[in-house]
Image (cartoon, rainbow, N blue to C red; front, top):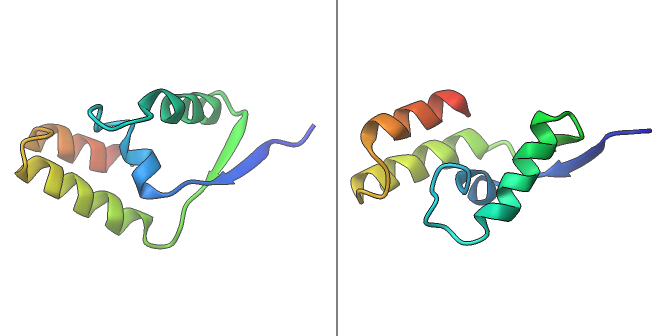
Length: 76
């Protein structure tokens, strides 16, 4: 049996940390499948930049603390 592969963009991945977003349960299901080795995630080239920028903006708008944003960046 081969493991399914999907391309995930930053907006989907950000739902793992920005819990006020819509469809967080669906994003959590994707993360769970990845962590349980049922899914391989492929990300676009600009993924790291998009994640970093979105978390910086979220912290500046008080959607997430600066500490949580830095932790999220390290996790990604």
